Image 1: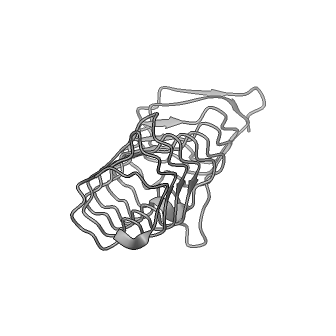
Image 2: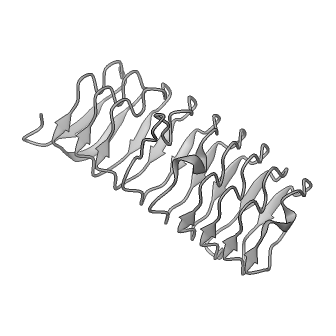
Amino acid sequence: YQIDSVKLEEHIKNCYSKNGVDLNDSVLETIGAYAFYNTDISSISSNSTSVVTEVSEFAFAECDSLTSVYLPKARSVGKGAFYGCDALTSISLPLVQSLPVSAISACQGMTNIEIPLVTELPVEADGTTYVSDKPELISFTAEYVTVIPEEYFINNPLLQDAIMYYVEEVGDRAFMNTDLRSLPTDGLVSVGEYAFYGSDDLATVSVGKNVT
């Protein structure tokens, strides 16, 4: 199913026969609210020719067959955009700088999250985070994050790779009982209690001279 309109509105939100969304070489810039809500699409095909810059709220929510998302030009992703996509295992949003927690909530099969330009790891009032409901998570990339909140990855026992080059603070029990192999940062100044407790496969963590 190839898309040629500049803005896709919610008029197809109840179509369940779309197996894939082809964004390559299309002129689509905005995927409107609820555009593919609860449809049977299994993939979003996009590459460097895709010009999608905005994914509105709940655009792909409850798409139970969607397995992977790569949107190289997207800069804005609305709340609940991929909420409840049970089969979604990988999401890559290279240019998104701020992402609502709800955008990727209730995706329990997620193994890979790539949001390299995101600078903050928000924690909702009820404790929900990007990763709190993802027990299968293996790899997490948010290169410019400087603070990892306490117990952030405590529900991710399979986590191996945390790509965060500028981390300065790691909260209490942040990586407790994970399968973390390394934390590629050399600017750590604060490490909380039991931050890496139980991470038996952890090989290297670089710390600054004044770490506390």
